[in-house]
Image (cartoon, rainbow, N blue to C red; front, side, top):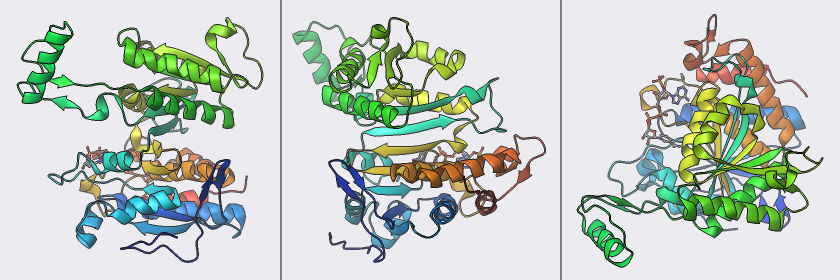
Length: 414
Ligand code: NAP
C-alpha cells in the first residue's frame, strides 16, 4: 500500500490490480473521484447516486463501489494550496481508475490546463468518446439513431504537443532560419511556427487500443481518419502504422478493406479501413451507420468528436474517458458552467454515462446497461433537465437531483 500524505483511502475498499492478463476487479473496488469545480459537485453527487443504485440493484449487495475523494482544481487549492496535489496523481496510479468532474483552468496557475496536466503526467494517451442517440432528444439530422460510434483520439501528440513560437520570437526566427537555410524551405519571416510531431509508438498504441476495443466489444470496424494525402509523414504515417498493427498483431481477428475486395466481412472478423478527414465529415452525415470505431490523431479527433455529438443533439449527454496502458480517468466532456454552480440545475447525463463507461471497464456491464435503459426511459418520458426541456415540446423540467431520482426510479432488472 502506498502512503498518501494528504488524503486517506477508505479502509473498506480493495484496490483494482492490473495484471498482464487484464484487470483483477474486487467486489468492492476503491474508486477515487474528483468532484470538480462549478457544477462539478452537483453532477458528481447525482452520478454517484445513480451508479451506486445500479450496482446495488444489479448485484443485490454482493458488489459495491468504495468511493475515495481525491482533489484537484479550486477545492484542492482551497484545502491544500495546490491545484493538483501529488496524492491525486498517486491515487489514480495506485487505484488505476478515477471518475472526474470538470475543472476550471486556473488563470496564471502555471498550467496550460489541469485536464491536460492530468493526461500528460499520467500518460493517458487515448481519449475515448462514445456517441449514440437517445430517443426523444432534438437533433439536427433526420435519422440521428443511425449514429453509434466510438472515437479513439490520440491525446498526447500532434499540434497539441504545445510546441510553438510566436511570430518574431527568438524561437520562430531560429526555426525559420534553420528550415530556410538548411532544408531549402521558403517560410515567410513573419510566420508563427507550430510543430506537429506524430510518432510510430504514439500512433500504434492508440490504434492498437481501438482495435482491441472493437474486438472485445463486438464492433464491426475500425476506421483510421487522417489527412495523409497532404501530411504524408505525420497523418499518412498514422494510417500506414495502423495497417501495420492490424497486419502484425491482429491477423486472425481483423481484415483490411483492401483484402476484402468489396466482399462480405467474414464472421468473427472486424474490418480495418481508413478515410481522409474531409471525406469523413461528409460520411458521418451521409453514411452514418457504416462506421463504428474511429481511430484518429489528436486534432481530427477533437473536431470529429464534437461534430458527431452535435449530430445526436449536442454535448449534454456525451461521455468520455482518458485511458493509458494501466489507468483510466472517466470524465464529463463539458466544462464547469460556473454560472449554474450550486443551483442543482444542470444535466448530469454526461458524467453518469462516463460512469457507465467505468462500469464497463470493470466488467460490470449489467449495471451499466441498467443505467442506460433507465436514462432512455426517463428521456423518452420527457423528464429532463433545463437544457433539454427548453428544446422538447411538452417536457417536464427536472433539477439535477430530480433527474437522478427519476433515472433510479426507472431502473429495471434486465
Ligand atoms: P462549459 O462549462 O461546458 O459551459 C458552456 C455552456 O454549455 C453552459 O453555459 C451551458 O449552456 C452548457 N452546459 C455545460 N455543461 C452543461 C450541463 N451539464 N448541463 C446543461 N448544460 C451544460 O464551457 P465554458 O463555459 O467554455 O467553460 C467553463 C470552464 O470549464 C472553463 O474554466 C474551462 O476551462 C473549463 N472546462 C473544463 C473541461 C473539463 O474539465 N474537462 C472541459 C471544458 C471546459 P447554457 O448557458 O446554454 O445553458
